[in-house]
Image (cartoon, rainbow, N blue to C red; front, side, top):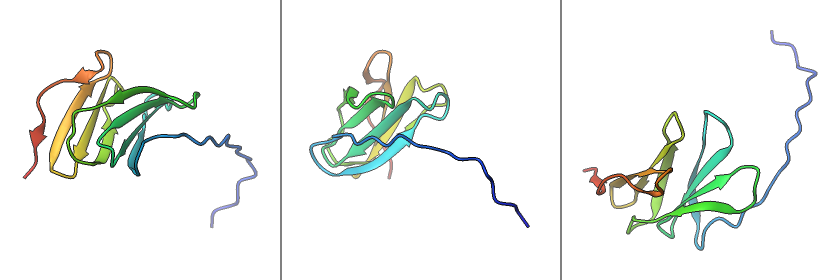
Length: 105
């Protein structure tokens, strides 16, 4: 039987104005825990510095709503899948899509 922990954890909650339409997905960078990616019905992927309440980068290229986002292990790239089945990978240093969209069928 597990014992209850007496450690108290406090969280500083923040609210972000993320997208012009519904936010459908998010991913927290696991390496540093300092980056957050959000995807939404506005077809954008937004990158956030967790310590700030504003978007540091907005990535475009999808023509349909974004349904999933994921950082690479190094947090130098982010991949996003859209409702149409296309997948885009962005190089965050260059702030541009690495390749043409891949199609998942």
